[in-house]
Image (cartoon, rainbow, N blue to C red; front, top):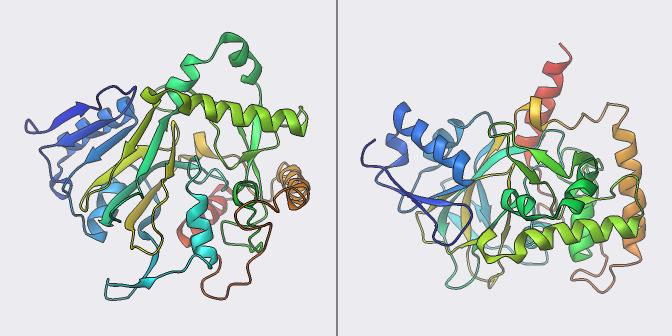
Length: 346
């Protein structure tokens, strides 16, 4: 454990680089050191790890129950032998969804239970672009003026990937149960108290819309302004330029993230592992809760409005008839939420 060095990222309000350890060799004491740093800094970078799929799963599992482990976050199909095939064209829903992730967001807020943290490990990276950016919503909240803090203290917003794809890209994926485009929208507060540190942060991003109690126009302006405020200060934004073998883990409860554009004809393969949130702090409600109907209605009304407003965006307000793995099934997250739901009824 004495060999571990944790170096804060220079000039930033958050983040640290960790060296002197191989993640598959962690003992309980060294993991405790890493967990403490994770909660303090919000994200950690581990260079030169080159983790296998099982090693990704094992390290992620130290933080809690996984939504999914070692899932390819890639623009290539992964074969059963672990190799990767040809680059998936931009004319697929898979790539439309990947492009959507280039806007600021936090993971799984569109499921009943949002994510605790997420991890990426770089396998193949493009020559230019394709970085991952992170933004500190804790420091963003701390820097807000008192009037804004008071205004948002009791407000919430619905979260949906169908909204974010439509709003950001003019992409209207076919709705299908068990996928990330499932027709539900979950209400989450704009101000989050971190369940482990007690620190407050704004809790916003591309999936958020429809703040109840204010007009649609005011809601749009407020949510946009909060994201823009968080990322306006360079000290609150970190850009990770990937090298093969890097592993990056961040706290979804406190940070925004996004991918940067790149030449989509070049391979970009990251291995993704996502840790489920604790239901006590990250559960909004389940689809059979009476509160869920308001979210469904809000989403359908918003999508109808966006149909008329997004003709000039990247995908022209279209629904793609794509038979080649059109909708990302995200089976681990769907199964996790279903399992938790069943347990809560026993």
